[in-house]
Amino acid sequence: MHARDATSVALQSLSFLILSCFFSSLLPAADPVQSEIKIEWGPDVNGVHASLSADKKSYLIGEPILLTYRVKNRSQNIVDITYDRYQSYCLKMDIVHFRDKNTPKWNTLIPLTKYGQDKFGNYISSFSGTDIHPNHMLTWYFNKIPINRLYDMSLPGEYHISLKRNLGNVTVTSNLLKINIKEPPKPDYEQVGRVIEKIDPSE
Image (tube, rainbow, N blue to C red; front, side):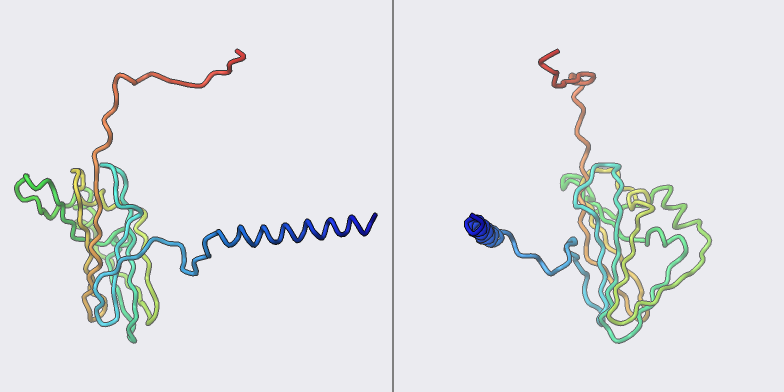
């Protein structure tokens, strides 16, 4: 009786092992690359290149746009990046707004907002610096001030953003980051105040 039970358990274990191997072969293989967004880089300048990225490609008007700036140093030299104290929150960038092609001057370099003018224009300079050693990458999260609070990105359309910096003895330009800004959906006033909910049929 015990031998029969032992045989049955062994067969169940073998069946489970065979099924596990079968179903595991249907699963995708683990990707050795880190699971992060694909980073787009600007042109390589003497082993140094930069990247500008956002969390997504499309935003509604007024939705905060938080950017990330990266500098990768593949050269044999230390790269030095200097900035004013206010630039800890966001570096100054070039942003071009592509409006409707029927609108005159649809390729337009957009201006700073009043808040951006105060930040970039009236701040007392206090320089800081960071060294980026060979085979190191600097990642700078501008997560305190959205870029669309500094620059007037209040119109719908496609925006092209780039960042150029003097890093030591080289000038490095980031990739061209393209962001689409859309108008929020118009509310359906006929549905305002209406609530549809599932009820308990026993009540």
